Image (cartoon, rainbow, N blue to C red; front, side, top):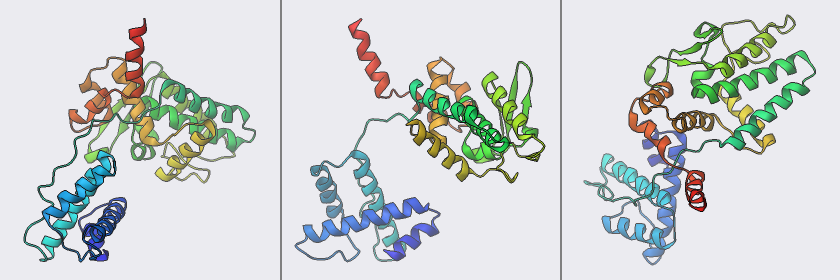
Length: 299
């Protein structure tokens, strides 16, 4: 599997994908040996093997997502065999996936959002040192900005103060290098503007010396990295009893816009989506939406 992994890496596949595909092929090898009376998997398989393995996974009650990823791994491995001259055609090329209901992105509901913000506010009120107060104000500003703009974490950490326009009744954040190297202006509502001002005021304490071009910095004054934001959200979420990560906050922003009746094209522009189809995901109801729909029958 080492050469298969190297083949995937050369294609630019992420490390996570490489690990998943190689693990899937190892699982296929175990099944192959069982299905073929102990004959070990020698690296080559047939369309019949693909069909039987798909049926085996279905009998084992594997989820549609698991089965479809296993088929994707087999297609990738088949392509590798063709590329290396071991086969002339990909045996998994025509394998059809299992249909599955489109799932909604994971967002925070109203209660979860309140728990997360409450925890951040508590930390701000409990802070005693100058840096502790500044850090708490910064963390609250990060969360409020993400919840009210839908910025990607990479876009958030790349912000400079020159990109922020804060006025009394309006404002915006200029994203200079969004996904696909596209720039966009994202409106800042009152919550976002006030949070940024609170962080700016706290960070400008003389003893901290955090003045610099980057909006969000650490104690040393260096630009905050995406990993630091991810870890902050994870730890804050654990204390609040909420699963929190950057994409979940971004999804929450989009879902709230959709629920408020914002036109899809406007949501798409603010999210920085290249295709409207991507934005349509947020119109997919989650379990709570479906539960509320059923409860209305009781009225």
